[in-house]
Length: 235
Image 1 (cartoon, rainbow, N blue to C red):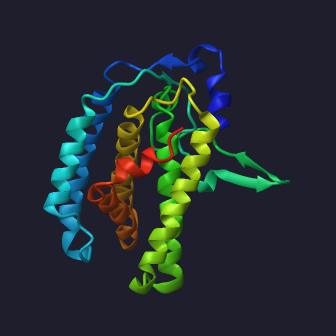
Image 2 (cartoon, one colour):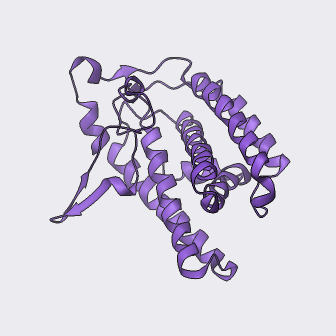
């Protein structure tokens, strides 16, 4: 409903615009630059990461996925999005949900935060937030006891699919949603972008938490059926 509402804006810099034909290539170039910085930082801290560092095969998969993203196009609209969408921005009160703080990511320049963007960036932000919530609870309650790993994985997948199904059912074939199969490539790209940002943030500010986004990064690079799981929730 948030994206539907934002897509109805008619004021100048709020009005939806056509996505550029090279939207996939633009995202790929941004990923490539930030990926190199992230990998350098991971390599610098590798000896302290207790085996959480992605394998060389996983890094190769990342490069391959980014290259494929260069050719992705999609006939869709870009709109003003939330820009920093996660569980902490939701407030449940009086039987309804309220969405807070539309200022975007504080670390980004204001002119960037005002840009109209692909809605899947918000979707990726919420999916990453769900993973943080599940894995942080696993750490807090069981100290990541491996006996609970299958249950944690099941809970995570259920949470993700519940959100994706609800989102897909709500937006249906809205003009701002890239068509399949482009939407799955874009969603992977935004998930990857968010994950590598989180890795850099944690390594620079909370090294003891770096394992969490690294798990998400490895999951993105190690699951051959990632597109299939996303497509199963498409409208």
